[in-house]
Image (cartoon, rainbow, N blue to C red; front, top):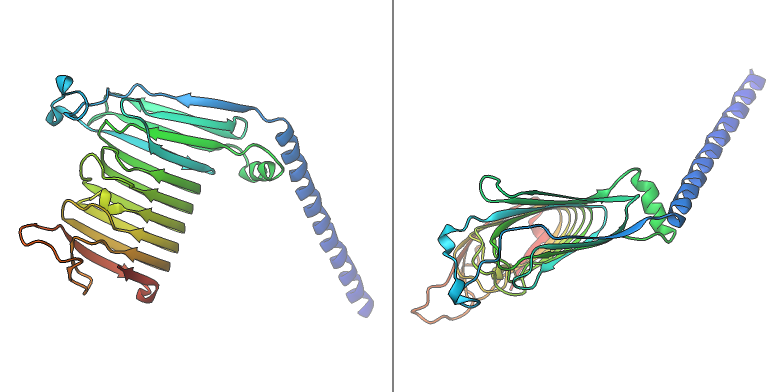
Length: 308
């Protein structure tokens, strides 16, 4: 019986060593394929310029060609961004939407779709993501392969709703000065940095931000002045800056799960729903200040701080 036990142990050890050897061969093969792809990249530079509606002039630009804004139907820009780093910023006045991308076309794909007569308005979609086995692509880039760069410049003089769906990457978005009717930012497994360095062309109707398994930094959301603001974050960290130029009342909801967060409160507003009511500054009596009404849900209130 003892000899039988030793035989089973011996064969079991050989089996483990065999599995370990196969694993080493598999990893070595993966590195070999990744190194080969790094040497045989097909790096391309692409620029997209969709034929969106013409920019809308205002009295501050060209009063002789002023368009009646009540007749304008806003469009929608949808960005499906994955597996890379992305930079979003306003373009120059009068310029169209523009996408500039540098990437290995064997490893990534850039796709656009434009519906000029969607109901209502128009819809422009951009998708950027890995194709094939993503682990090999990540190993290729670690071995010196080209990392993609994607820049998206949004038109400041066309009204549109913005949707960003981000996965496994990082998005840095400066949206100040744009003409956004609404925005929905949904991100998973990565980092999102969004800011409004200056007020929008008009107050936003709705701003939704949802992030899980990642981190978010949102700056100067008051310059967007959304009538409805919804922020949800879980399994990560968040810094939400509500300072800026609020020009209308806002219903603000914050949903916090499994993580830590800081919410920076603005001046020159009335705050309700936080048990911290009252004015942030002493206003003049004739000025009606915007009211921010909060609804907060948190599984750990101690990890969600509201600071001045």
